[in-house]
Length: 177
Image (cartoon, rainbow, N blue to C red; front, top):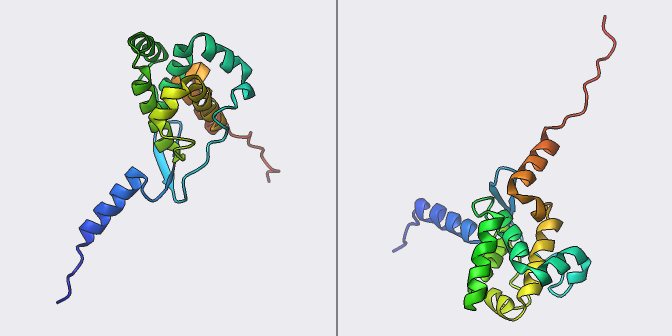
């Protein structure tokens, strides 16, 4: 006796795979915050975890006040739902309680899912527990390398992207009759 497959089950499974990234789809975020996917294996990070000096100013800011870097990253990763100030304040409060890595590793996970990045070199929470400053700098560089400028915030990034998309070359008219 042969079992017949329900097409709705297949479509549902396909949609779940697409959303969860089980098939290694690469996700990108457009100017409106929409996530699009394309097939492929998990992508590599564009910079190494310990390459902080690729962006010395961010390295300095992160060493002196990591709540700023985290707030900037969180605003971009959450597509404006979390402001830089709110993210930074939560970071600061949790840092004083000694549990900030439990919060910050969730943003590394969100970033990885958005761009289908490998969980490399270790699990997100382990990276944030042992190397939080390195992780924050790497996430900041990753956002920059993917076209975002975390230091200007989500709204300014959207405006910048929309401005680039809306600019058209001037129309030239040919000879008329």
